[in-house]
Image (cartoon, rainbow, N blue to C red):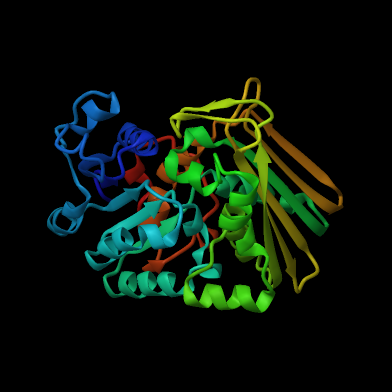
Length: 358
């Protein structure tokens, strides 16, 4: 058994500060940190994160290949962007250097159904160098994990429906822009919604070419079907803009969103399976006004119907907690790009992370 886990932090914004802090609180040692923001590179990670000094300076992202090859940490935590095309390079750097990696990238929870070529490339390199790459976050528990808790109480399931609402201001500018914040109705239709007004054949072709833009729940549905052993027959998605009724301030965008412009969107993904079970998931990401709060709802229709609601979940902290609690599972997993649907059920880690490693 290892006496400690060493890790690198790639991305030192809000999410990265949480994941690194949580990992260190559970006995892991930070040995490297990287970021693309020149205003924080060169600073001690702890100082930049508002924590006590760590003795680890934040390096430029382009230094990651050299440093990871030199230090060989047990795992790299990637907290940057939301699409596989955006995290491909750092995942491949980790894979070629034999460094396990786990990412908050939403598409990475099950990228096989949206970015198969990139995923297969990372899977091959990771297998060649005996390491594991994966992605997860609060979406694992908010959708799949809820059903994992009470699914075994169900005699027959006909339909699964789950939704999660969150404040896009909590996740940074990349996510806010991906949700269409600030766009007019015409701009939203052209830049976001139009991508889904296509036939199944056109969508399949886009996926094969690596040009498909999945909503966050598209990959969650894939994860849930894989977890339950269901065979996907057809899957569709639709993105619906949510508009501001009054002017609203977005701290992430650094501007006021005028009434009539988008404050985010609702994305709905529907999956029909060969087993006759339909899965419908929805993510509602908007700039919050006064009194709005995060909510998770999961409903199973069948024998019996089951309805579960989580009020005021701390989605940011849940995402980061999931990442850290999954670290031993990633280290214990076989080599390749292995989704957490193929790993043990997510567990709370009360002790130091290294004690859960084989």
